[in-house]
Length: 379
Image (cartoon, rainbow, N blue to C red; front, side):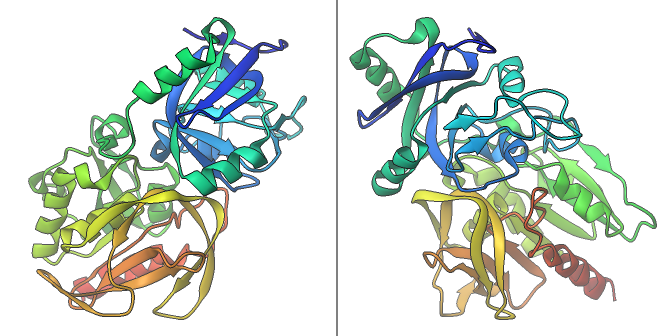
């Protein structure tokens, strides 16, 4: 049960599974919530972050100290609801100031039942997560605040992110179509594993009619739309659980249909090619991650949201059941695999978010690369 905190100073407490406790004030809804504690380094774009389905069952800590100054509008959401399990900020804006703002962030969180906490030393919390790793967390406020030992026991009983199969929980239940803007040039079947609204829009801008399919779609469902290309989206959870999407992608690779995947889709491609996946210590989240495109040597500032990665060799070409594959992109902070490409057929993926509605837009060219693959295949 949750209630609004607007105009109140309801006490709240954040409890990490290792016993570290942070105290503050309720922000958004009052009640209790659980998830995996992760930090996002973006200074802007909080509305896109909140509505990104990839954040399902995660409690997001904002490293930027001042959050909410532009309020909430009706144009920027990436999906139909807020997906984060909880929200942690240091200094929430008292009054939003933006010509598109319709309500405060606090009001929006409360209206959607999202339990948050403010007044927390998010710098100390972020340093703790960076040293110890992402972990389970609970936020408690109002009547939910009890003795610390009881709250810690609740947190330690919550489910972990490793082994979580979440894509079907956030994906569309029914197929829908995003029409091409202007002249239709191609048809793409997009498997929704937690797709953001801007992704099919970026394809529609390029003359692509996008058929968005549920996460449970089969290869028969994909080819029923007669696609020129197939796309696998971002999404939440552990890629080791995604056997269904992996099977569908292998069917696509077997037919040599042009293929593009982002984020979770990159991990699915990794598994489809025979590589493993693993959980990162604290993941990459934010809109300022440096990645090198090894095919061009160009360094891009990119938007990320992932806690798992592909385990593939960085400096060798690998033989796979679908031809030779190599790592095409790499994170310059920690050498994590950020992209894969096949050398013998038209398929590639990246671990980050090239649609990046809140910016940056350095990687938008990847949609053009997908179009080029479909043009070449048609020719």
